[in-house]
Image (tube, rainbow, N blue to C red):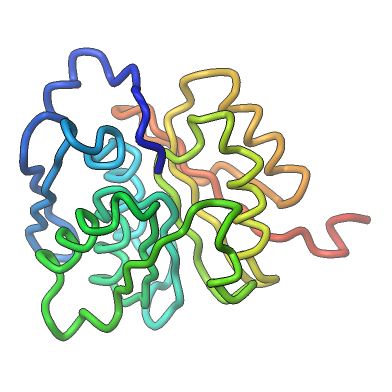
Length: 217
């Protein structure tokens, strides 16, 4: 989402400078164009996105016909995989990244699935009026909680998008104490559980939903 300097992943940083990253999900080869030089963190595939795609492919959530939204989509890998698995997906990021995002979506979805994937501008906390509140079954985010200055806007966005039956799936590597701080903030408004951990990639997936009245008692 945020086009800012980033400290990277150590030795693995070289993979971000490759123009193409290739994956296999939903029985399809997906080629994601990357552009670190022009768009930085918004234009490379992070491990959290790969782990979330794997988790979705495992059938953790029934995507057939569900309404999903991806926040801070960057390259669009997660949204593309969700569409291939049967979801109607709104794939979002800031305006500056949209053309790049659209190019990856169009290159990796067969034409008959184009109507299932809409690329749309969303700046957290700002243009929420363009999205019907509580309209999504599933809200997806991969590596979107690393910038402390975006936490309140992200939380406001999640509250707007999340209905009583919505499920939030956030995939992330915990790098700093502030990452835990966001999870604590999230826990004040939602019920949050860790549902998956990829040891090899050191990536956690957290599932959240609105607290019911019974849970508040």
